[in-house]
Length: 492
Image 1 (cartoon, one colour):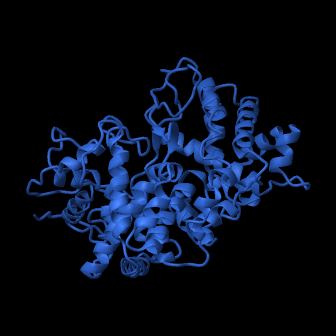
Image 2 (cartoon, one colour):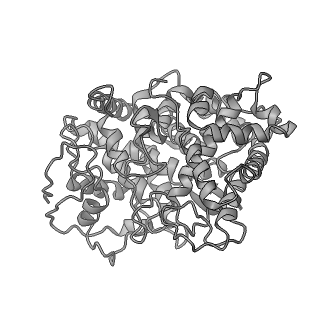
Image 3 (cartoon, helix red, strand yellow):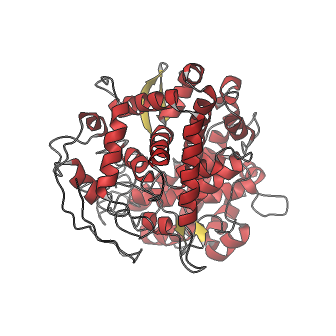
């Protein structure tokens, strides 16, 4: 099979590739991820060429092709080698693939994959201080509000660069750190958009888990000079780590209770992680891979629950989002809020900076959710999410109140007490997991979920009372400032 795609030198030019393909039948295993034989893009190669347009043929140093991604997918689905249950097939497929790969991964595989990651790091250098790295541009080309590499014209970290930075923070001893940083940095580079919502990047309901699987397939194409052994190693390691660590969703029955999280979190709860390490061909390699997955899972949604990670500064918030500071200062009239988020000198504490970052992230993520997304709780108002990019103006029963309700009810997301959610037997699996617990932003006796829940409720109340926020339009103008908080400077 050959796919002809002309290389493009202009990184920021959004374009749809011109594709000539031979038809590649959709493997049955991909039905678990929502990709069916009756898909309107009826062959796998055509689907990949159209849905992965932002990475195909975008840069000469990374000559990614649709046929390369397809061939990698065909290699990965072989790890899904057992019948899947009728319900929760995407999670079951990811767990099966993760188990099969982790069970057979060797220290040599890790070394080869780390060498691959070092080559990608070498290639992915920004051409100048005013330009962004090629892989930054590939992700940013999607135009998503949250799923980006950088913000502020490359001067500040977006989600991908924050994740990359987080890995060095939680894994300071650095065993195969370049590999871990690559897995974290590139974990969102494929963002399939729903047919009816072409601007939507998160909350894809049609293809659960397929973003993550395609991203793993992409990673193995990012070092064209790599040996076949290096490519095979990074392909299977990415497939074991990225889907299990970043495919987020609702799992109704994990050891008898519902869990909103990732497959690796479910495996931690039901004891699968320890048993997998104990029976693996190389227990040390297995423990490291599962720790990598757990690290991605923690930081993908819960980095604002960790201390010491790269964040925006008080000075940056003062300069770019004074409206946010006015809201936070208004909330400081509540003694509990002031104690948790401000220093004695009246500046934001590290927890306060984490709160500011979490609020900024919330607004950006809501833009990527559909206007009817069940992930946004508008307390009965419809559509649920007026901040969505596909929101139809004038369609909401109370647009202003729906926005405030959505913010007020989102404080608990991505926040848990790491001291209790990571018991000793899990922390003993690998030092990375113990480091995550040790980096908890709050002490064991404090429930961060309750703290952030209360904070978001107060912020929504104070926001609604700000001058100009009597209307939905005024509210949106203030929230634009929330978005400007962004991440830490790229040099952090």
